[in-house]
Image 1 (cartoon, rainbow over the protein chains, first blue to last red):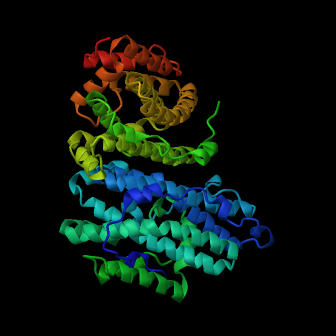
Image 2 (cartoon, rainbow over the protein chains, first blue to last red):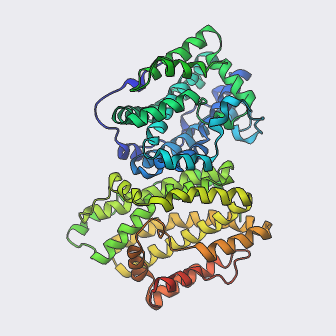
Image 3 (cartoon, chains in turn yellow, red):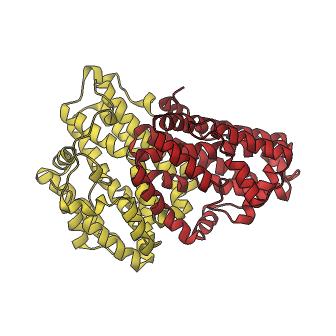
Length: 273
Length: 264
């Protein structure tokens, strides 16, 4: 795993520069014709489809963020507008891979039933309950959103790297590299914001600790199909090597300001099948 | 005609002003009245993402086309803010993210309750409420186009007029999306028509009313929408809105001008 989260230049992330250099349509760079002679396995296609669904769920996620004080921070919202744009085109690149392998787009087929586990209840809160509790939480909630955004980047990066290794497809590996390049800046922004806000506010730490003890991963998974989630957990975090990957993420979580081994191992535990 | 979302996303770009000689405003600055109006427009454009929030708390975010449109729409509006902020910057008026944040923090309780109110309404009437949002969005985008056109007419400045024309051209694509959505959804549901008519008639106010001080709203409406020419522009928006199914005869823009005491 590359440690984009550890890049600490001391210079605040430049949101304006990010918005000006946003990366859109990738279709011309995807080596799609290579899939005709070397199609992806069913397992790899399943992972591509699920990652596509996660990447395209930005509006569902924005809804949960914007009903809170997060919408008041114009720097954060400027970032999120461009972040959603870049993720839209990441999902489009994944759709292009699916189509080149004779599959429909990720959102064109019905998703299965969502999971009804009690442990997911907190993440299934709708916008009304989120908006109500946000009135009490105020500005420190932004730290929660930045930290969960960062951890989500670590998790999806791990998934993309796993997919790249498992698929043994140079064409897919090239696409994934491109996607990870785009996502590197997202992780850097969340990293910057999360560390700064957690260091400055004990209340932000408290809210974030509570959230991480209950969070469901990756972000938005509660709205996805149970079968896709189980597949993802096995594919990325199954077996002893998978457990190591989860533990590594847990260690990084534990090292964030105000977090500790208990929080880290809870996050790691919740990634496992 | 149905709106082609794939084509829209593929051709969505941030508005460009590199080739425009905005520097000339250093020697030929815009007047105070116009700068104040531009500042209002800038805030409204930057604020779009918060308006998205209200759309997103209803079922509309679950549809792929709607999500795709809103992603691009948000970004285009953000860039309108950037373009207008550049013009203001040349006049020595700084609009950076921290300033915008300070403005948003002033919003207080009303703003906090808005998403709750919206989602409660959204839950009650379900998909019909998406139709209302689409009609509301169309009214706002029509207003934006008229506002930019009026500003260009009043200023008679070729550089500003060109920039505003480019912005208005993007707003026209937003109108196309909102109207095609509103038309289809309203046509399918009598209930949606009744709710849309009620919501627009009772609650609609000029774009920016919920985020700017009343004095600023009055300033902008006086500047752009007063007098016979202003009224003519207002009537154009009303005529467009009342062309939607079930909204015949609505005069929400003229009514709101009267309420604000803007002279005809």
